[in-house]
Every structure is written in C-alpha cells, then in structure tokens.
Amino acid sequence: MPRAGLDPTSVVAAGAELADEVGLAALTMGGLAERVGVRTPSLYKHVAGQDDLVRRIAALALEESAVAVGTAIQGRSGRDALAAAAQAFRAYVLAHPGRYATTVGLEPAGPDDPLVAAGVRALAAFRAVLRGYDLPAADEDHALRTLRSALHGFATLQAAHGFQWSADVDESFTWLVDLLDRGLRGS
Amino acid sequence: MPRAGLDPTSVVAAGAELADEVGLAALTMGGLAERVGVRTPSLYKHVAGQDDLVRRIAALALEESAVAVGTAIQGRSGRDALAAAAQAFRAYVLAHPGRYATTVGLEPAGPDDPLVAAGVRALAAFRAVLRGYDLPAADEDHALRTLRSALHGFATLQAAHGFQWSADVDESFTWLVDLLDRGLRGS
DNA sequence: AGCTTTGAGCTAACGCTATTAGCCCCAGGA
DNA sequence: TCCTGGGGCTAATAGCGTTAGCTCAAAGCT
Image (cartoon, helix red, strand yellow):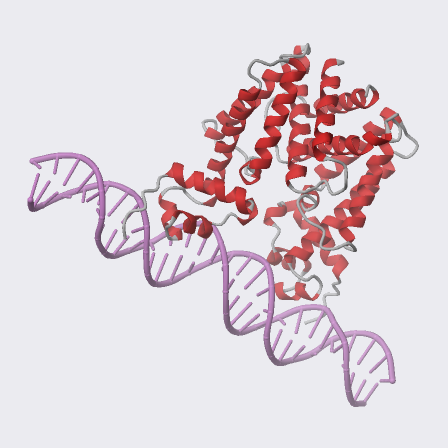
C-alpha cells in the first residue's frame, strides 16, 4: 500500500470540493475518503473529526470570500463598490454553496480560533464598502449587519432554490443592490 | 401496554417543539419517540420517516409565521405595517429556530404538496405589506424577494449567533427596517 | 549502506442513527 | 360477543462517525 501523500490542507480542500458538489448535508467521511483514495479511518490522521473538518472548510470559505470581495472592490467606491462587492459575494456563494453553508452557525472554539481571524477579514471587506458612504460612526455596525443580512439572505435563498416563481433572479438582485444603495445614501 | 393516543398532528407538533429546543440538526427519531412516550419504530405509523416529519414541520412553520405576520399588520399600512411585519417575523424565527430551519432548502414534492400552499400564504402576508408602498407592478416580485432576503438573512444570522460584536442587535434591526422603508419609498 | 524511528494507512470493532419486518393485543363496529 | 383494523412492540439490518491497535514505508541519522 503506497502512501497517498495527504496532509490537512489537501484533505480540507477535497472536503470543500465535495461539499460543493453534493451539499453540506451529504458530506460524509466515507465519501471524502473515497475521493482522496484512502480508507475512512485514515482521514483521522489529518483532521480531528467531522466537526473539525467542517470548521476548517468554514475558515477556508471565509478567507476565499473575503479575497473575492476585497479584489472586486479595488479601485471602486460608493455605489460601484457596493455593486461589485455584492456580485462577487453572491457569485462566490452560488459557485461554492457547500463551503459557504459551513460558515453559518458555528461558534468559535476559542479566542485564537482561525475562524475568528477569517471572519474578521470577511467583515473588513464589507466595511470597506461602507467607507464610500457618509455614515455616522455610530451607524457603521448597523449598516454592516444590514448589508450582511441582505446579501446573506439573498444568496442562501437562491442557493436553496428558494425563489420559485417567475421573475428574473439577476434582476431581483440588482434591484436589491439599488435599494441598499438608496438606503445607505439617504440615511 | 396502553395506547399512547398519537396521531400525525401531535407527532409533528412534538417534533416541532423538540427541534426548537435542541436544534434541527439534533432532532432525532429516538429523541422524539422518548418525548411522546413511545418506542422509535412506532413513530412510523404516523409519519413516513424523518424526511416526511421535517416537511410537515416546515409546513406548520410556514403556516404559523404567515399567521403571525398577517395578524401583526392588521389595521396598519406603509411603514407601520413594514415594521410590524418585520418584528413579528423575527420574533417568530427567534422563538422557533428549529421549526424555521426546516423551511429553508426543501423542494416541494409535487404540485399539491401542502408545502406550496403554506409557502404561498407566507408570501402573501409580505405581499400585503408592499401594497402600502407605491411600487410599479413590475417591481413587486423584486421587492418581495428583497424584503424576504433581508428579513430571512437577519433572523437566521441572529438565530445562529452570527452577530458577535458589541452593538445592540435590536437597534440594528430597526436600522435595517428603516433602510428598507426608505428604499421602498424612494424607488 | 544499514539502522532507527516516526507516522500514514490499514483492519476490526463499537455505538448511534434511521428504517423495515413481523408479531401482539387493545379498541370500536357488527 | 366476536372480529377486524391498526397502534404499539421486539428484533434485525444497513449506514454513519469514531477508536484501538497493528504494519510497514519513508525519512533521518550514523
């Protein structure tokens, strides 16, 4: 039995891919083992368990989405930055629904959990968007939560096929972005 | 062994309560059986399986949230109606996080699935809120999706303890509602 | 080159989950 | 009173995550 040459990083990456393909709920240790060409128990040499695997995928997803949004808003500000950030974020969630699903609903294990660092970076990208609007400092946290709620809600509902009826989803999304822009400007 | 006197309705109701208490992920057939005072396999005389159970809980949750929102907006319109609907919706999700979690990400099994009827009723309540704003007919679907995304996103993020840092969550929510009101009015 | 040591991968096994098969016996209608 | 339907049971299966303990390939040292 030749060595498979795995390490935590490659296992987590394969897990993220698998989650995107089959959905987070169907992400199984057996399936992941098969994908990386190894028997199930061998995975435990690289990750502590399914919980740990999911946490690491979540950190990866936060990092990646932060990079995607951060890149999209370079050289833009105001409404341009908002639209670019929103598009980049939604594109990321739709392209990686399994990865993104891991990021909701997990408590960081401790103060030095890599998750909190990744989460802070993801929020920083959106905070940068808000700098293009003249918000009172006291409103910045509220605006950040509002922005995050709207984008998170839209992306997860679409990823879950929550929009059943007819109107064009892309149009609805630009409508949402326009509403946010109006709301942020006229506060 | 005396009869326990169960029926599908009482089993689903108990399942919804249990899901709220322990979280949807920890909703187990064994746990539900213990709660209703019966052995696990007996549940299958009332629901077809865990999938069926979750679908029925989802239909219940959609129905209940539609009633909550519909009641809240009676006699109100415009911004008042929006605020009342938003508050009622968020209160419902926070009071019944397990129930609500069942409603995201399930495809209706067929055209006469009770789920679609319940979903339509839930949407109708929000549609009624939008009637208080002067929206072009073509924008109504977009506005509905926007409203739903924002409220769904905020409520689920809060239910998942997604708002870690300091600012007051209730204040953030009224800020979100104000932004939606401004955006809907000034379209 | 040979020797040592580390750890990646394996098999075997356990416990918990959902689910099915098949039996029993209580309750309501004839 | 009988008898039939169906709610509840026990027993058993299959699939999951996880642990224990073994083996041998690869990397490092002499």
